[in-house]
Image 1 (cartoon, rainbow, N blue to C red):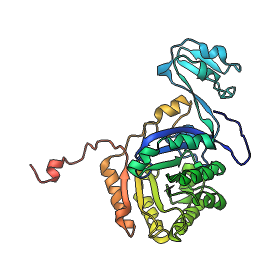
Image 2 (cartoon, rainbow, N blue to C red):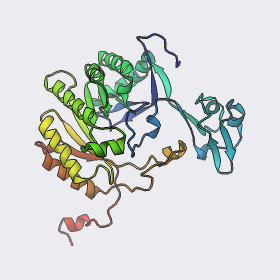
Image 3 (cartoon, rainbow, N blue to C red):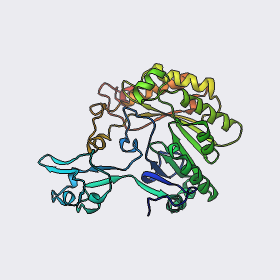
Image 4 (tube, one colour):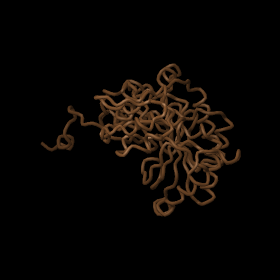
Length: 339
């Protein structure tokens, strides 16, 4: 497959990975495409390798056999094998991928590759039988898929023409033109609403949230006008010390009630995920939340209750994700009145 542009009207896209058999990115069994590049830099991001649109090299120490093959093929001398492991000089590394191709143990990985429109469409249609049997489809996620809207819009159009249900998972930070161009072909939108306070949003994500909130109102208005999309889900990451303040959850619920009433099918609170620690280490990055524990189910239940009290239709609220055991939780037997 090629990484070169073939025609102006048929752009390539930078894709991080394709995950099949997903049940967490929309209805039914889905194939999720994670695009590279994101306008936000959320401090808790669990896909740090998707923030940059450029390919990135990472080293998986558990696979390394210490043979030094990668050093021999690196023309820019960006690699150094030490007692502590492989060191990547990222100021020299061009992410050409030659070391990853040469590595016999598969310890080096080049994150991100180019796909053209026809190739990616054909790849996604391979799973058509699963979509049809489960009521699933294809979800475009990231990173931020709308950063590559010139590719995403025609991809959605082709998939819908093939009868495949489509969903777009977005942070919502894009121009109105980009949003409307993609909305015209999206079956559903999963929209992240993280923080209502603009100063906190800027501090924790790197960008203010005014355009994001304007865009979600546009999505709702389009849906209510019986245009596209046909469904709108809202996702809120529950991040300890950042988004998990009950006041923030209430403020999001009040915004939904005031501006999106009747347009939202689902408001999902997503429990903090700390399983991405290794990703940061492989990319030689520090992570603010490296020592942060998972939240408890009790905490998620409490926030869900807060959310339900803040919206007109409490049935739209749910929560998902892995939680840690609460040592202070009352055993179920006692909750049921059994001694």
